[in-house]
Image (cartoon, rainbow over all chains, first blue to last red):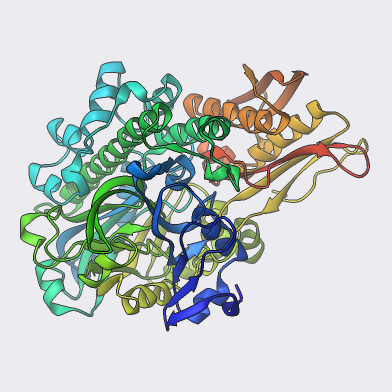
Length: 476
Length: 148
């Protein structure tokens, strides 16, 4: 994008004053290089979001923003139900509650070096990944509804993890307000055997080494040590979330004119929060959030089984679990007034600062761990929510690197086998059922995650705590 | 596998077009039906080479929509649901249209990870770059971006 079309507020904040049907300004947090690299569609989509009824304060884009569906990926917008605010299926996206969790292993990179190949092979064999893969669980109708109501809590109650895990998950592992009866039979059919599966595309399970600490105080509180190996799991609500997204997007496209909503783009399909369709979507979407939380919890259990077998005595403890495609009702202060807002984060991570009541007791004084995933060959980061961030973009930060190149371009530029070999020579073991999938997910097809995270840090959205380097990557 | 046009003498073909994060699928043919069939083939090609998928098992699909474009999205989403729920891939399609009502048969087989080497799972067909209409040459074109 051309930076001259923005008002530059600071080195990392760019503003578009309202024009046309925009109800609020649009704000992008990024440095000039990231702005120049962003697709023009980000400008168009963000200004479209700013036209939606009931939007509060501004439409925001994170430093990793790129062309999405209706909302840009990396888009954040909050709506007030009492002011005709809307909930948008496009603003949440197809992969509802896709997110990242990271676990301590208590091991040093040197400890696992001789066992790296074995761990990679065992994890690849034990954690179902890729197209057509199925999990070990088969859920009947009542079990499906219990899972959709209970989320990670349901998984823990069925022996997949412990109570301690739940404390380190957003919503304490269980999204309140989930309504399984608002989820279609088709969505449930799609999920019947998918609990505990990684999926494909940019989803992964990685072993990573902490290679840099930026904030020793926060790192101590998160118990992060240089050289320690952590496990990160990136996946979402699988087929159930995809189907809910598909069905409600269609319903909202057709219903929007009846609600007097003039959609600038069909993908922005939405319905008033206070409408039967809006309320039905929220009930179904919250059930999908629980599906994602249960899914990551079961995958965590599978990962623990592999570690218990390969490295007996290892205890994997959860650092935190974040979701980055959600709409959540949260209290926020706007112009000195406390308001309850429906905050859409599409490819953006919640980043609550110190003192937030939603944080677990032992992290409340330091702030929320913010987990930023990289791509196969590049770094991931752990940040912490800040006081300053609570006044910006409704406590939100970036979620990853963001694609810089289409899958088509990536497969023209790279070959899967050559990439796997090249990464192996750098000490990064890749396991994937598809070499073409590896090529499409080539690290070079993504933006520079370090530049994205630096911009988020400089903009005060969240503060850098630690950098993680991949050692093993299981790709779907 | 090709990600560009696979053309035959009758001007019936599918192609992919780029999208920053995902993939565009386009079907072209002399009729709306042919364009819808080719768009479905293009979608299979996002996952694997359609030539590797044996058309052994038939699945019937019916849907209707207020207009041609929503019908294309509904058709592709109905296929995505069947692919996901049955763990199948499809390589042959027969579409019949009566106004905005679609009746179709898709033939395929269960996913075989080794033989199909599926690259990516499709989450849903979207309204992005969505178009159903005639090209300058009078052929029908049906296209949209699919989220992967």
